[in-house]
Image 1 (cartoon, helix red, strand yellow):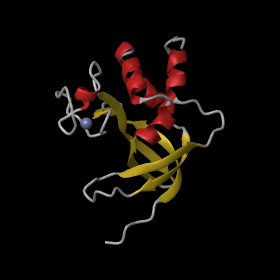
Image 2 (cartoon, protein in one colour):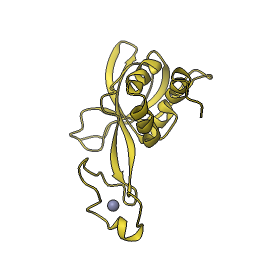
Image 3 (tube, protein in one colour):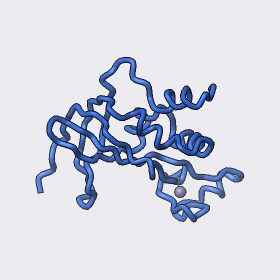
Image 4 (cartoon, rainbow, N blue to C red):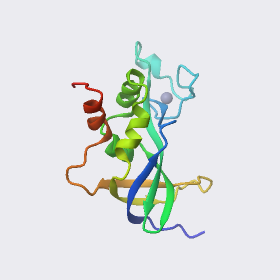
Length: 157
Ligand SMILES: [Zn+2]
């Protein structure tokens, strides 16, 4: 099978799936941790870093994009999602914990925003969504979601 070249498109965000936007990984080896597990099975992180939890959150979020005549769902992993959200997944997770509707509001904030993005076919042939390899807002005064949300919620930081 011929690997498809990444394609660069300009599209508008039409929806962000706020129901699930991140997952936990081991902060040492970056392997995915299940929600119930307390530690990493793949490395002995705690042995070397006592007193830390050894995990961090990274983004994985589905975004619907309208681009010319097409609408499709792409998946944003950590690097791309940070451009949209303007903070780490851990920070956003904490923000959502304090402000329960913030995840939904972030979707609303980003709706209609135009981005130039490079989409690549996942290496894993089973993955159903194109992934966003890189993304950049078209608007020079683009505000990442967290900036707008902090203002919206009156959080000074
Ligand atoms: Zn690990």
